[in-house]
Image (cartoon, rainbow, N blue to C red):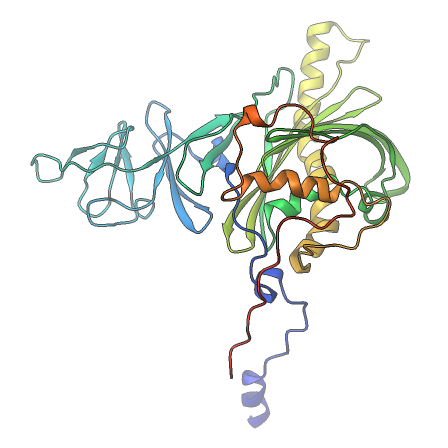
Length: 384
């Protein structure tokens, strides 16, 4: 009996490596830009949901007519959280505390007492719903409006969007840096780069194009040749297409959103287009190709985006330390050029688009030089 009592209080030591957000203070500030906070199928008409952005909550809701809105989370009347019991009545968002109603423009239009509503306004966030159902909001350190718009993609013939969301301790700049870290593709992912075009740093956009050999899941000796054509629009949006020689095209999005100090929610989304079989009548062939793409898209998302990143890169991101002055070697890729491009999204760094015309590749200093961002003073351990 005594042994059982002791066993009840016994706790095994945690021998796992320390997560990055626990081991170090944040090494980079929060960037501005467009950040994904959900998908259309998560916000149905009449539904109210809460999402995290930077260090606070955002409330998403859709009116009965289908209008999507993103607002601050707290009622300006007496501060109730609108995502906890808040409801949509017609086109208005209704507070759960005193049932004050707010119109889609944020204006308070009704009280529960039948009295004149106060001159209160619920702060709205710029929100976009694009590319088959991806929801973005704009974040700026100074509260300024959007400096650019995200591109719409023609998804005709593609399967419906599939998506997954994971939480991890890292920063959007670290996620984007993966795309230019040429050295880790053959070493970690066993995917040698066969051909790569010059990177294009133009304003808030980073363009890249390369061809690589990608191993097939569960078939270690088999591989396929894939051409990737992608763009980063700021640090919260990476969109690209993977084209196989046989014709299938997988469109994918990788979207890190800051939800706390050195912590993100990383969202993946994808859709697939397959060529129609030539041996069938065109209409029947297109229908068969669409049905097959719809069935295979979820597998393709997990095998390429989620499996590629989560199984290989995620453990590294969870525990790595940001190196402000890395000791680089030939073959690493333009890591320092990428970091200098990324600085425009931090407080005090933004330049208007007309001051950033053309490719920056020729004007960037050598990758051997130290970055402009300086490391923060290490956190002092607390006593006891």
